Length: 256
Length: 290
Image (tube, rainbow over all chains, first blue to last red; front, side):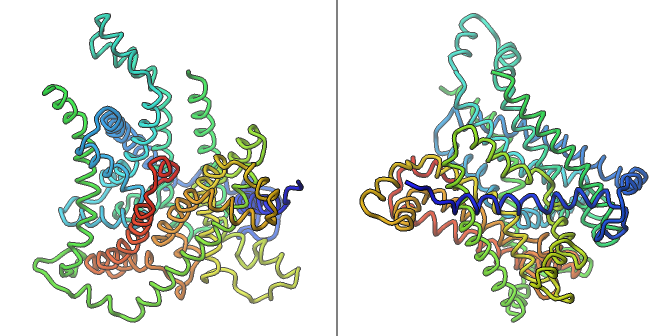
């Protein structure tokens, strides 16, 4: 039977559609012309300009601080949650599961507004702290679900064997849980980290004046500065993200 | 037994308390604060009032709501229309090639969301590649505006959400037994009839997931219409942000958000009821995200 060529053509078109904007953006970042458009020669000019922009460095620094803090908290909360959901089945855990799952179905703008209302209502000053709280909240669900999937492949009898042989909980956590669940922790942590670095809408709503992360900075630059600087910044941003993702894939695959 | 219960509580409490404080409580606040008066400095005043709800009666909101719904619906339809053939194509590839095809699909979406939207602004810009190509092909005039209208929004919405539609559709297509298509052909069904009557029902669960995964966030779009849309193509997300940042009226923002929240939960509820009426087996729900 002859297989239809139609799905193949659609797929190729879709892939072109996916790569075209990013490809053009990368090329443009090396274009000497000030407003993009026609090609005026190859240049590193925009990358040099980026090097001197201290406001962008400050935003990058904030982004990293926020991503590290919220990833750490989300990893602790999410792993504990996954452990409970895996081990106990009762009404309370059903409710717990609902709480973990519901944030995934809520659009960013609603989550951002609801947190903003909370902070304003209880007079919590907006800043890096409120951004970390917001990021942790949406990362917990993702970490919990990744860890839950890992726990389902985890052989529990190892723990019982260790206890029979006299190991305390400290030893069990250090020598069994962390090594065996390590790849899951790494995967969940990297997912949380990239989600935090990537978030714009929620951060924009709960950041308050003067506290920018890179995406918020890019958004305000879109109105004012030359698009070429944003292109250069985007290419570096992409390169860093790809490196993190590739390293994480290698880490996850290299362990048993 | 009692110790076990104690352990469960201690381990559950951090995440339960965090999510109640920072997810459940704020969500309820959306509905509560819509009944509060605004203060001049952007805060929330004492007492209760229906003012924010009365201001929702403004006819300009109706056209924005309508635009939000039709843009999200069109985006969902296009994403399913493109996603099904792509999922079908990947599922029929040899096992090793499937992994590569999936990576190719996901790779562009590891870049920052804002950067991807911005890249479209460069492409659709009057001096951009797409505009120049359309002029050369005589498909556009020099002063046609490709940016800052609802077609630009729809295009970028599809660009953003299409991979999220492809993934659950592929997960369903991968489990589909393609011999069934051959069987249908042998029994005399045409190619399209076989596809429509055998393949599509086979990936139904993946399709439901794809619809929700595209439609719900599309309803809540803010950044996309803000960057590639214009003043006449606002969506409800832009109005919410305007209430927060320009008019500094949080009660108005929460009344609008309450409308959006109802719009989000309605499709979820419909799908839930649909599945219960059909008495879906638990295994069938596993493929779904919701």
